[in-house]
Image 1: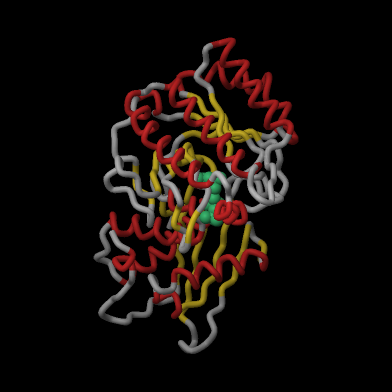
Image 2: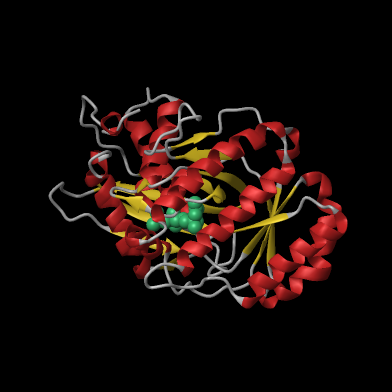
Amino acid sequence: MREEDFVFNSPENRILDDGFVTWKSPSNIALVKYWGKSDPQIPKNPSISFTLNNCHTITTLEYSKKEFLSKKQVISVIFEGKTKEEFKPKIEEFFKRILVYVSFIADYDFVIKTENSFPHSSGIASSASGMSALALGIMSLEKKLNPSLEREYFLNKASFLSRLGSGSAARSIEGPLVVWGKHPIIGNSSDLYGTIFPFKTDPVFENYQDTILLVDQGEKQVSSTIGHNLMHSHPYAENRFAQARKNLGKLTEVLQTGDIKEFIKIVESEALALHAMMMTSDPYFILMKPNTLKIINKIWEFRKRTNSNICFTLDAGANVHVLFPNREKKEVDLFISNELISFCQNNKYICDSLGEGAEIVI
Ligand code: DP6
């Protein structure tokens, strides 16, 4: 689908009665990382992620028709029961960006009520789950205005709109494996929206586990948006984008054959390459903490000692995602609680696994 296919143009200009819609949308963890983009939120390389099951955002979008259409639109944001003025600029910017595709939003005032399943400032980015939940709410409005919308169009456009809020949010609509960004061996892939990994995956990846070790629950010193921008003048940028494309090609094979040793190599290399980009940006920065490295070394040691298929990945922060096949859960859970939890801030961690994507609540 092309960009122009996502422009809403209904023959009749209907206004809906006041109402609300609620969506629950998950977070995701990239295996091949998106780091670097051009305008408007077009990734410099394709990425692929596991959709999570337990880490999610629930967002209710209340809409009421504006008293008169020329009136300035009012958007209120309520996060976990409290008004959040500081979230408003990002959401207003998002509404401005998507207006050309969903022009009907200009006719309503909105109250956005949102909450996360994971603790606030746990260091888990809520932009993927948050932006996708909001985009889905807006798509539900479009569906009310145009009930003949097909499911595939609905999901693609929800991902398209999510992308304009936060790139990684494009991968949070469906599951359990989503590709975003054009890649020659993934036929239906697109830079504009995420699509489900189109090949049959080996059973070893069924119900794959992700235990998130919360190493640092503070605010990040450098936002992802700044980090992406630094890739414009990065001396290794082109090689990094080529590496990611190659890794996505290799991972596509591995996911089908179940070659888990190769899976581990690609996934860990991607995590370290992402952080290597941060460390070699101008200005350079480090998001890992000493305990991030201690955990990585412990994982390597355990893998060598036991021949386990445990591995790690990182997002743009200090937390460690510990990935492992469901069939190894007993041993790995024991290892995590005996040897890794002490490296987490206040011993906090989240057990998650692969999920199927967003769901409507009401
Ligand atoms: C390291 O999607 O948070 O998690 O598009 O600026 O909102 P914006 O960035 P964001 O970047 C995510 C970066 C990453 C890797 C990934 O999820 O692929």
